Image (tube, rainbow, N blue to C red; front, side, top):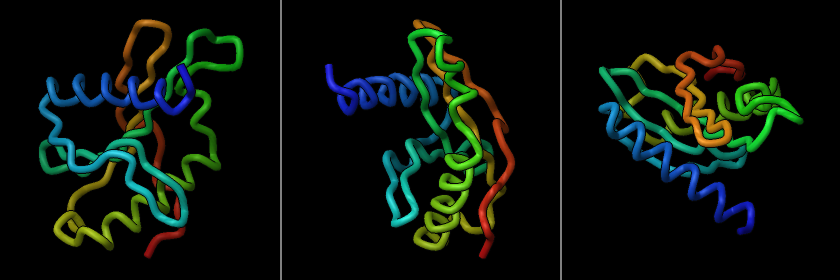
Length: 120
């Protein structure tokens, strides 16, 4: 299985999990010139940007550890662009979560990192 197909499979699993946990999925694979956000959802009036990471082992770090400073900055910048494109979400509280899939377990890390962009 190639990386793109595997990534899509894990994102599908993450979406099913999130929907079962009452997250309304708004967008998947939202792209801008800055980069991409895997999943965008809303729950209880909070706009949540999700990064989905899979790791079959801890050899090169856990799924959460691989969301480093550069990736956090990219996600933050793309989240700004998302909110400019979809102004109906502009005034919602924003949160950055990670869905970590480690072997066969899925972990939802809420508030995984703070905003790391340049702002509006």
